[in-house]
Image 1 (cartoon, rainbow, N blue to C red):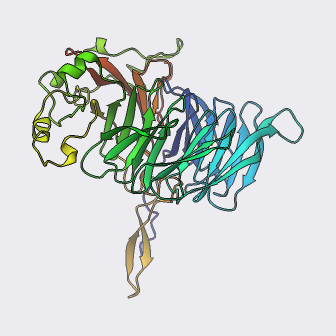
Image 2 (cartoon, rainbow, N blue to C red):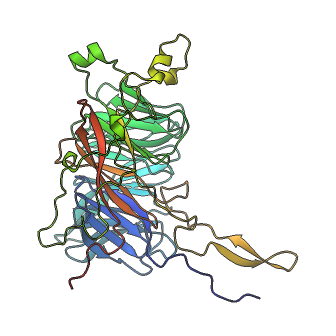
Image 3 (cartoon, one colour):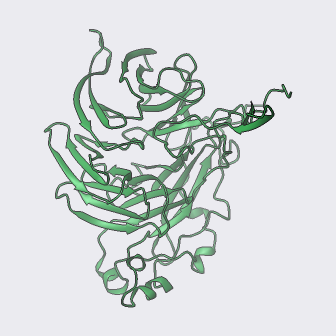
Length: 460
């Protein structure tokens, strides 16, 4: 009998969850050995902690670098998957611990409230002083909202407005946290996969499990304002993000492509010369095959005392195969075919104005680091191997590592956004929108960082 220990793929930690804070200034990663917090604009780590025995974290949320909420998970969880722990990182104290008697799938934290997402309900908590002290933590329950089966942990909070899946698959309920209002939007005919509220709470973007259409609704009139076709083939939408001034929507999917959709009203000249429905092709134009010059990209802000990550630490300019210009939105074969009567609707739907590939990673099937196979005794008495599955992660029912989590740079005027992926091959990427020679906006890759490895070389 083979008694040798199974070979481990890697001893490096893997990222279970990625979440941006309310202002898109920080993002937190829940790992199998604790948490890490990074600045969103340059991916410099600000916090590295292991809050509790076991240290595995599957759900995490934060407010700046101070208040953090975590739920245990992974191969060695730091606590029960039913318990939410709230920490004050400045005081190095656990403020509160709440047991919800069922697995917690997600958490959303804002400056006014905390939403704890469960399978078929979402609990809204309000901040209060902790045990008579001056420390503030979530304590009082102010809302309990039932939903359809919400295994993807969908929830978006902007100000006093919250969006959740409705009781019927495909519906969205818009809730007023202050005035206690409730409105229903029939967004899709199938189960929701992603949703996002704009920064001002005026727009709602949704995608279903089909992943072919992205719809935008006005939260004041409850009417649909835009509909975009991401593609014809079904896909898993990983993330949706509306830009700070409601000009664009960004989306990522398991196809490995980052799409940008245009929400701006058409200009007078554009209305006369170019049809409103932008139809992109998969073949780039002649100019789009040229690599953008370095002047097309802005430099990242870096700490003055650090080594420049452009020459060390895994941060480089766009490689030739990814620094391509997006598909042209001018006249194409697809748009010509769409003019024929009786053609399917997919040929005439509005599509993304620009797109680019993002890093999907090279994660193995056993991306959590466990042995891929386990030895077992078969019914006939012989020894065989069986697959060793990944430990289920809340909010990721597909079993894959988190990829393509998006956030727009609030200080870049709708021209820069970040894309973060987890798993065993975790990476932060920065993309910028810039004008091409034809005057159209194109998406370029500004740089990246593999943030689980050493960021900067040691001096000497």
